[in-house]
Length: 291
Image 1 (cartoon, helix red, strand yellow):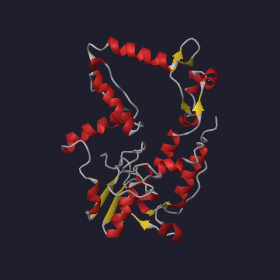
Image 2 (cartoon, rainbow, N blue to C red):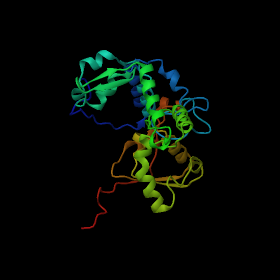
Image 3 (cartoon, rainbow, N blue to C red):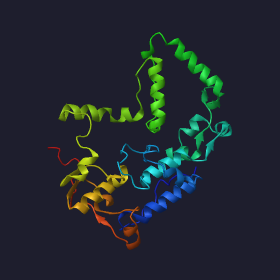
Image 4 (cartoon, helix red, strand yellow):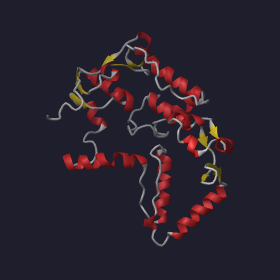
């Protein structure tokens, strides 16, 4: 296995978030997945006539930039369109017991599946199943439950594209059920329930348009440059208007401090950067627990 080291070397970095480091990282992953021409695909990401990013739920803006994606989104797309493939020989070589000890990184780097698979308990290996046989078996199971469609669950990955998810939910509804959980739904279910009980709504109370008019943002417990880098563009616009940003986070993340927009020729050529937070309050983890 050639995945990340257990004790990686961490080098000191004093520059801003974004900039040439982001461009270098995107180029590295495109070539690493053998899709150097993937930049053409990325040109359609989050565009009105393109496809939604599978990395996060940040919405398509009304007026997108020519490259409306972040470093994380580019990596997610590269992993989806990779030319690396997991074939029959791979599973003939590796047992499930062996693969269960691999790092997630190594499993991802092995490549994409190209055929249906079924686990064989006798050999502890996945065996290929012909597409016709797989669809026929799925069809038999669905027909057996057709008298009570709600016994079925059409489960999908949260990494699936918006377009694929739309087609999948049409299939489920034609079959007769709306049991359509996905991994993202399950991840956020606890948040949506708790938020509704606490403040009366199950989702955020602001919209993208609020970023254009607000005079103050309180940013709590969220690492923007890691989990939603495209939001840094909105933050940059907020700072240009003269509005204030106060960040409250145990981690003093670089993206909360300074940002160089890789899509800004001016900043890239001059080495300019935008100061994001006016104030960063580093609270102590667990500091609100009484003795």
